[in-house]
Length: 446
Image (cartoon, rainbow, N blue to C red; front, side, top):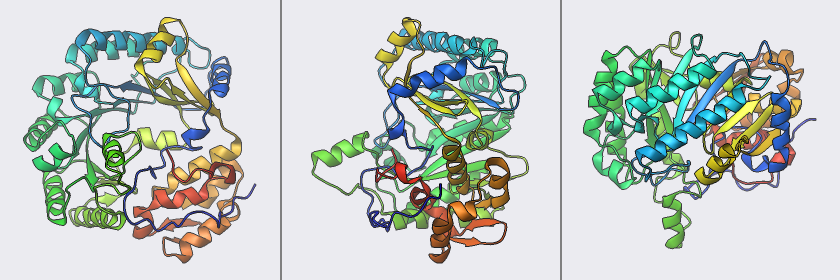
């Protein structure tokens, strides 16, 4: 089925930042995942283990010192050590039920990811208990990457050493900004002095890949400050930098404040300004020898530094995802766990898989998903999709490709499509036109 542009869609030239979410992290959109499709996950689990599909393992740690004003993830800031232990125990019981199923039994992890929340919120003994039990169920000894998200203010020499000892290869530091006032007004728990201290010590421990996250367009951001943010980031010389443009999803404290004040526009920079800031950052990093490798990332040495988790997922890897609100993908079926810790724990205690909703993808869904996600890398080769899916993007997305080329967002050649800088900076907005018609009924992706 060819997919065509919806000419009745709303005006695409976004100016002010309003509440909503444009960032495309998966496909089809989560709003199409339904409780009545949960049996599709259970059916996959009864199938024999596949020989040629990489397996990833994700564990969601939903604890934070503070909730950022722009955060839309499931996090808790009021849990004590006993409650954290109870959650880890539940997560391990959940993983054991998954790992004992035919589809997963005996498989090893190709990659492992700890996200949150704040994984570095856990103590070293808690981390060692968690990871030792995980390794007993899904061995890591052949994993190409073990990634771990960390908040700088939770890190010290003991914590960082413990993180390295459990086998983490990619440490991702949630820096976001280097200005204490901006960090404070946006609800971040850490301060600038903690960033360099944590980074410098992490460098001595031999992590294969240290990434820092930045956000363009936080509240109170200015051009003057953003230039300083980029300068300080370059001075650290991380292996990679990930730069996101600030959004204001509906379930954030920033949106609740907007709603209370009767405002539609968020108190952050407009979209063009945010794109200008990211483009400036890209230029400065390139001057220092970095390479732009996606709409969000610059990498110092692309031959050595890879994002295994991202690339494997975008190419259809299985993802065993555990923990409250976590998202997984097994045998072509997307699933999400219960989004609140109460129902999650109750399901696990009852001996059930705590899955809330799921989506059984079609071959066409999987083709569209991979094409749009990998377009974020800036270049797609058409023959790859012809060989893998039997679909030629040149025909399937003829109108969409013609549109982005005509508007200067991309150039087309006989072999593929290459996004321009302008296209790369707003790729998530453009990708909505590549959705199948039945998945375009929502103006925002959330």
